[in-house]
Amino acid sequence: MSNYDEIISPLKEKNVRLVAVSKTRPIEAIMALYALGQRDFGENRVQELCDKQAVLPQDIRWHLIGHLQTNKVKYIAEWISLIHSVDSLALLKEINKYAAKNNRIIPCLLQTYIAQEETKFGLSEEEILALLDSDEFAQLHNVEIHGLMGMATNTDNTDQIRKEFEQLARFFTQLKSTRFSKTNTFKELSMGMSSDFPIAVAAGATMVRIGSSLFSKSA
Ligand SMILES: *Cc1c(COP(=O)(O)O)cnc(C)c1O
Image (cartoon, rainbow, N blue to C red; front, side):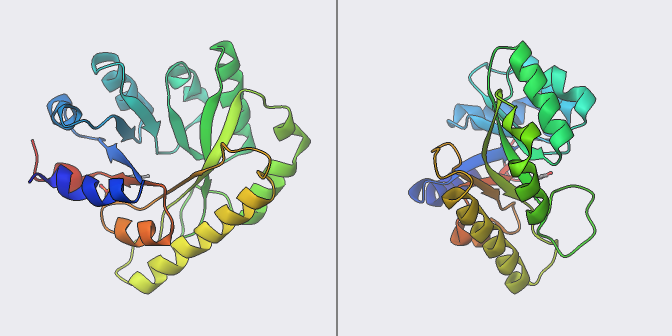
């Protein structure tokens, strides 16, 4: 049994989508997973994402999981499947603008700050509530908020990781039953990477982003 089967089988059972994080991995390694049926791939840098998208099969669903600068939105707007890393209203406005130019609606997740460490990116719960309540947000018709994304503290303390994921899951459920109660598109909770995805799945993740443990043994 390959690494892939070991990882994907329990996820499939729980209806959790696997985003294979292919950053720094060569085309052949991506094609090896593609041949096994994997279609969701995630990258954290726009340039690398664009280079890969241009040469890989067109039915791959590409996820941007890393920080997105506003001036780079235009390069991915035509085909990006989901942007996990929306961390400002300014970015959301830019995504909306290029989505409109491409005549589409771009699904986005709001990156939520949950870790007990200094990170540059992500919004607090208060900031997310303010964003969602703003008049400007109400004007954006070419973006759709499909859920939240978060990264736990990089620590061996599994209790702390579990608490952070559970807090994010609570906030997700709260938003779902309040701000998003009239839609059914707010349904994705993207949390968990190689080191902590079982904890994330137990806490309610609908999507995990796995790189190293998926690619290390293969290709
Ligand atoms: C690299 C990365 C991952 C995957 O990390 P692994 O430890 O390789 O599984 C997940 N999410 C984000 C945002 C990343 O940048």
